[in-house]
Image (cartoon, rainbow over all chains, first blue to last red; front, side, top):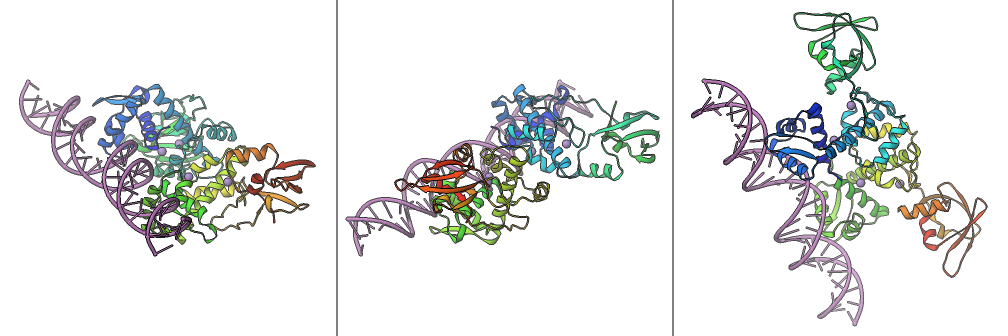
Length: 216
Length: 216
DNA sequence: TAATAAATTTAGACTTATCTAAATTTATTA
DNA sequence: TAATAAATTTAGATAAGTCTAAATTTATTA
Ligand SMILES: [Mn+2]
Ligand SMILES: [Mn+2]
Ligand SMILES: [Mn+2]
Ligand SMILES: [Mn+2]
């Protein structure tokens, strides 16, 4: 149906044009580890296929068709990540690259059976919502720890940064999805955050606080 | 490491050059649904990479390195087929195309965990042996029903033809892996075979008998 | 608002994997 | 063994996806 390259572009455009934004050529080049000129070529092709709305120099977003395809790829990505963690016992920082390949396995019958096999999970190992077979999912409304007030108690529900180093850092400190944390102090000088978790004190930098998402 | 096309060629060469045979350009073109000239191009590339022994006009077989890669792809193919049938409840005639894609997922850690998850199965849904993580497997020594004598009792252990139509035909008649069959008669005129299975009489043509493999 | 900088597109080239048609080599057969 | 047929390779094109360098458009700033 669509090539691997096309699918990766659609997914990248989806992620960059959330909340009505428009994705730029340079943003796509950065995200896809390629050059702006290559992006322009592909944008023309995707526009010809009516998968994106493209105005030269003005950026892109997805058409309804393009969005449907993108969400299906994201569904596959997150279901395979869930499988790798829950069934094959990989850690949450080990699965992204594998899922990046597996999301392109074409069969929808396969992914629907996999979904059923795992009991229709709602969230992937990083807290991101898994679209159902109709592409529906509730994008849960989270905020970074850096937006939480002192004395509030919240639950870790996701991450903004999905890089291996960040995930490994969080795991080392026990900061995993589902954990309850209470913010006890915010250092005025550097905005680092002191919190309590499992009766232990943990200190995280402003950068970490910005990328760790918690319940509203 | 190797491209998808290269992997498919290595696998095809492996299958065509079993028991010391040599694969020809035309055989490969037929197997891979491509043209002889395309095959020649690829053979040069694989020879440059020292994955095959190629003498122009004389055909090819795999080097030790090439064989290792081919067996690893076959391991992945068969493990994914087993997964699809045993865990996701697909039928044996539905899984080949999917496995044809999944065999190219690169991670060996993934396939080793999958192997463990399923309890290290020895045979795939079509009775073909699954190489272990070191590439080792015993190619079991089967014969077609057409080579069985009247009054012998044997067990169905595999198929020579893997096409959907053939597998569906077998399933319709209950002729599945593991079933015990007793050959009661061989019709002299057309070599069709009469056999008993589950106390029922089944008649199969010579062609079916040639492609249905049973224990020695 | 004119000059400069940044972003984007165009032009031309390269790689991989394919194809058709023509040339060459090997095998078959009269 | 010479002619013919079959198999294989070579030559030359094509499409997808990428790249660098140059040209163009848009945004910024003096
Ligand atoms: Mn991908
Ligand atoms: Mn994820
Ligand atoms: Mn394949
Ligand atoms: Mn099989």
